Amino acid sequence: MSSPTCSIQYRPDLQLLVVRWPADAPFAQLQVDFEAVLHAAQEHQAARWLLDVRRREELTPQLAEWTTHEFFPRAADALRPQSLRIGVLASPGRMAVYERDEVQRDTLAYGLDGARTYRLRLFGEEGSVIEWLQR
Image (cartoon, rainbow, N blue to C red; front, side, top):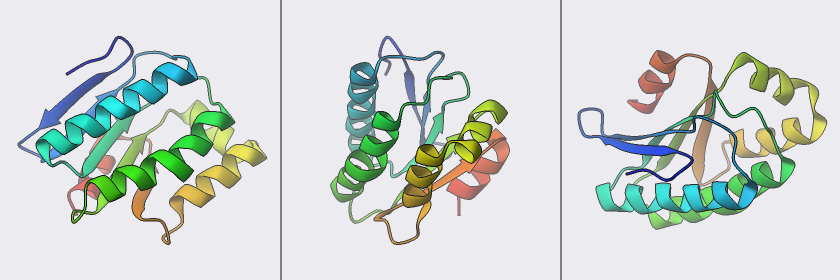
């Protein structure tokens, strides 16, 4: 399954959904992409997601706010009784933005908080994210 701006692949061998964005996209398109991810997750009963955003350079507070406060909680509810685990594969440049931009840092801290109905973690290497998702 694909959209013009991302690829969505279910990996039955790992029981996870792999989503890759090869480039940036406008906020409205990313919302469409995330809805397609949820649809695929429901279709495959996949509550473990690898989101590869290494090639997306644009970081908008609007998207971060929407995913952590609205979309991920709604997706977690939709996939119950499974627990939604989201491993984000990020570039070093993106990680640096998370560290230096206060709004991004605060939004990320909110999403990483263990009190959320989903589990979110950031990774720099694909092997590490797959290992975490398999726990």
